[in-house]
Image (cartoon, rainbow, N blue to C red):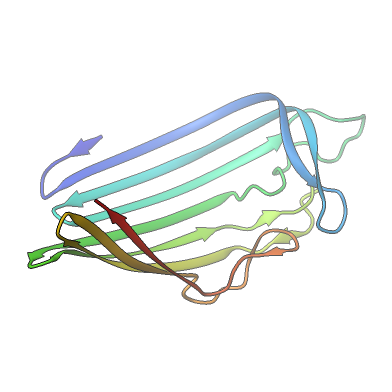
Length: 190
């Protein structure tokens, strides 16, 4: 669904219920080691919401997902891991991204852009029995860029700071993600 009053708006709502056969997942096989495993039957159900707005130089997007993916077939008689959440998949994720481009067009300066975002990922089970888990995490990032021209050359200089709050988190067990970090870049076209 979209609307153009006061800018352009898009809203997507998705409900899903998917049955899969022969899904490959990655499971722990020791300290820092994973191995593929075939699951005969899996069922994933959930809700996805996404909203996007843009007007002039402003842009905003928001998303939220709530889902549950379960193994629905036994590997052997008495398999206790039936109808439990698959490992490594969060049941909840969310995020917000925003940016604004100031159209300057004065002398060599063309524009200045600012951006930022937030990501949330819920806890993820590490093993098939839904015992140990990786905790949820929140990450913020921000960036800025300047675009200018030098004759026929177009130059964009920008920088980003990731993990602004210096959060300590892991996406996979034993593999910590970078703490606060910065990146500078320069793009030149002619």
